[in-house]
Length: 134
Image 1: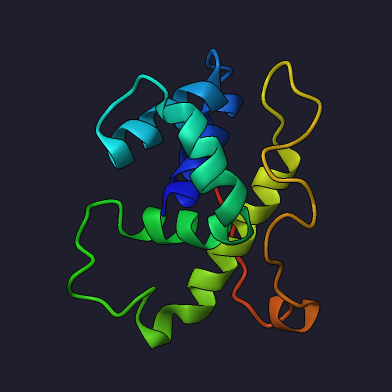
Image 2: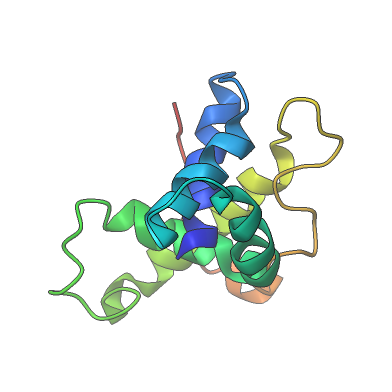
């Protein structure tokens, strides 16, 4: 979930041109996980981000859908009837993270191939939609 929170939070911060969006997000996620902030961003980078990048977009979609915290009343990651919309949202987060580059960095939040990508045959049957961030 930590890797998903990074994608969920850092992309809007980059779009809004906030200062140090990646570092700030890593610190916040680290503080939430380990309840301390001294070296939390370094631990998040090695223990969470590098390990769980492949599923970060899926977790970002989950966080987006249930950001109110009410996850007890649904099946994980969503109700079966909502799976196509969930997968479309996850794909949108993956694409957003692959085209969003933090300031003073030369690569996007997720490099193409870092994250699980749905096959084109699945993407073609997902419901249309757009991810709007501000």
